[in-house]
Structure formats: C-alpha cells, structure tokens
Image 1 (cartoon, helix red, strand yellow):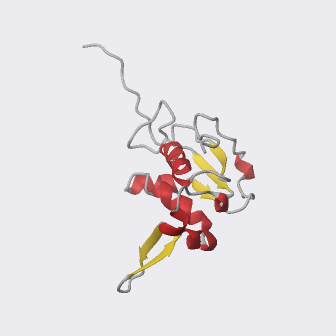
Image 2 (spheres, one colour):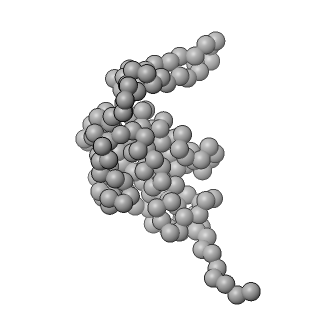
Image 3 (tube, helix red, strand yellow):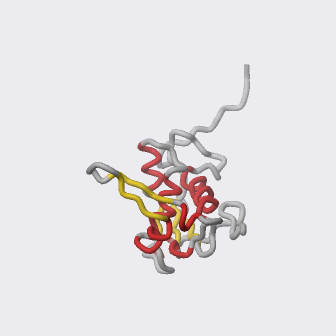
Length: 152
C-alpha cells in the first residue's frame, strides 16, 4: 500500500523563534493556553509529540495580567513546605509577592508532566516590567492567530 510518509522532527532540526508577548490586560488562562501551544510547538505543521519543536516566549508586564470574576480573592495557591500542613496564599497576595509565578504556574500545568514538559517550560521567560534581557535574540511580536491580542 503506497501512501505519503509522515514527517517526524528530530531534535535540533528545527529553527526556534523568539516571540515577545505583552501581558498587560490579558486574561491569565487564555494567555497561558496560547503560550503553552507555542512552547509545545503545536502551532507548527511539523509538530512531533516526543520532540521539543516549540519556540521561545518572552512575556513582559506579567504584573498587569487579569483574572475574571472574583478570582483575585477566591483563587488560592497552595504548596508543601516539608513541614506538616500546607502554605497557601490568594492570587492577590501572589501578585504582590511574585507576579511572574501566576503565569508560570498556569502555563506549567498545561504542559506535559515529564522531562520534555520541563524542558519546554525552560523556554518561557517571564518579567514583571517592560524590560527584558533578550534583545540579542530579536524577539518578534507574534501574529494574531498565534497569541490573540486581547479577547476581553
């Protein structure tokens, strides 16, 4: 039976691009799902599940992302410290303490839970302000179909 062969990407075969995303007034979950797709490489026709085919994403203004509804006061983040019981804080407290962590956690939970997922997450660079140290990589603004500008 003659048919077309499937393309399987090999590690290091694809050129990785750098995308610059402004997080100001973006809804956290919607932005995180768009970023996760780019980090995994699902936006490319050459996507291969067992190879990291994704691009780098630089997010600025992470402290200006928004939640819908009452999530700023009702959403809690919990973590285990090694001692009995868990620490927890609301999303509003997390924004004041470590604003980058809100978006990083949302994206992390949308990626595969394995070594490849951790490698993909390392390509995500998040900064609270407008400045970032990645000018040398010439990050581009992503096209509208990749990361939607603002879906409020």
